[in-house]
Image 1: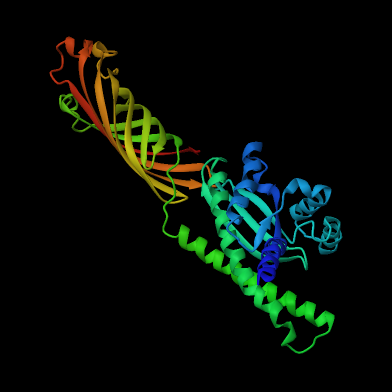
Image 2: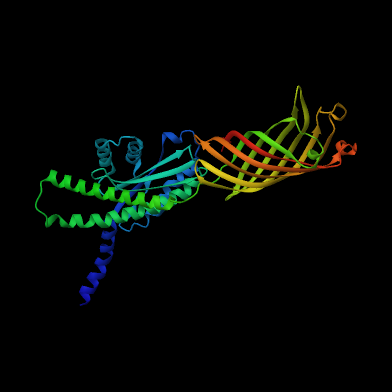
Length: 400
């Protein structure tokens, strides 16, 4: 009995080592970038960390072990070059695979590709697990996120987990196929290879569809992030207030116009800060045109923006600042009289974004002010100190 016990104890470590050696080996390739990403600068440190994060996710696949990239040498670099090409040359890949060495290289390689969409500033990573014996894609995963290149680290972490799930599912389904070869009818070498390749292709396609469905469910119903904009607008103002009431404008044709510069910057979620420069003017049109009054204001404020789609966003906010009101040449004796004061604006607007950065926008505003400081009212000609206008702004600009 002692002899059998000693024999089992001696053979146990050997059995463990054998089980470890039978694990399938995976090598994660370096990142390839698409042609669409040529205009985007991605830091080398980010590109280097993406394969590492994918590898961390693959540690969950118990049937596999990760291969140290440095141990594969030039052969792996050749595989990486083939993986980056648009057409994966099977014959060349098989030749390169032979260089990896039986039992010392990798059974699977994972190719990684980064793509960037300038339309909606989205970064995406696609990972494909390729079985070197047959050059078949057996599992794949992808994910994407809006933002700066740094979001690739979060995307890589999610892709690694998704690929591990897909690869585990493939391996769990592929194992019984190898066990059935004695029960099935004998096949020629070519028939067996063709049947095996067809089965693996079917499973890979099923895994790909499952991953696409998962991605659709994760992204469905998610609103896009609001974007910053800088717009220049033509303004149609409608003046109001006590000062306006002091002018008897009955029977006169009025000409109201202006322009506006508006900057909006999202800071957190839907919260945004904004800055605006407005100039509006009111004139009397008759045989000649006389400038009645003009307002120049500078304001800053906060608001809330919401983007239901990548190409549209709406926003509303409040701004505070200072303004200057100046009388024109409607009465020569009062021309140039001006006053300053605090003002405020309530705004509500919408942007429509084309080609990823061109903006067509519309904005409704009400601006009110109390112009109690300056010679306009010190002269005693007018009794009111308030002047405001309701404005409709329409213009264009850029989003970034």
